[in-house]
Length: 301
Picture 1: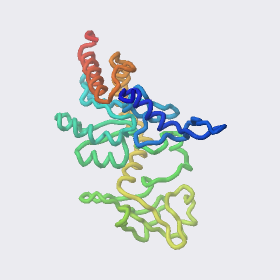
Picture 2: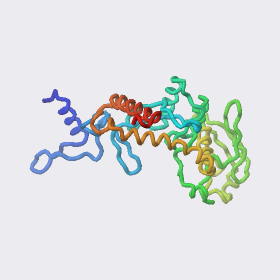
Picture 3: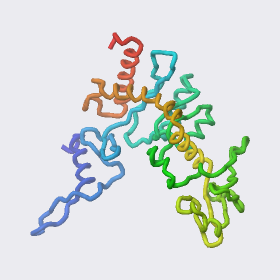
Picture 4: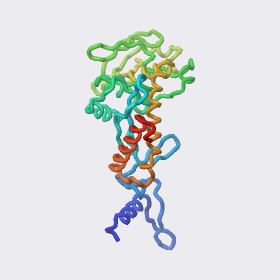
């Protein structure tokens, strides 16, 4: 019995999810653990390698599929350029460098790449630029409320400060704060790699923007901690929230969303047909091949 894979899986699930305690009359009692124990938690006994991730209030179990496709205004047909399947906990921003590497190897590297906030942050914006790719889209980790951004009392961030960027080193220098105050001094920390910018603490304490400002006011000095990644992410956030034309430009990624939705409805993706991540990679490849055929000639669908 113990040689059967299903029994071993059941045994592991029981150990991770339950514990046996002493109950009444010294009889053993099974209790559900508050938190599962183990290095690799089994989330589905039907597929032991799937993971789960939360999307809003939903708990999604399975794998995550990534699809990239072209966007050409002059062409009626867009082409799928990259497909991959990973565990559901794989962050979009972590997958992006691999996507860029694959399309470059395939000689399909784009000049511009559009993604949602999951792919776009200060780090991926800068790393993409170093590869010769303009990564476009809203920056992650920030409210996407246009109304909130336009409020006069919204929190200030790095992009509200006046900065200059060295053309060769790409390092930033803070020139002044939103109220026009010039820093006393600034320098990069050897420990954190971030730039500590110091302002006059007395002036900051009297500033009308102090409740909204990211500068931390101390007893002797007020400090803004910033780096190039933080600034790039904040600057993109301002661009996306404040420029309606840029938001319309970024909306082109909706085409890829349509492809992903079509792929998810593919009959090959029916629950239970592809239990392992490697099988799912093959399945998603087949689905995208079929979708590409339909894009080229709808009658073939």
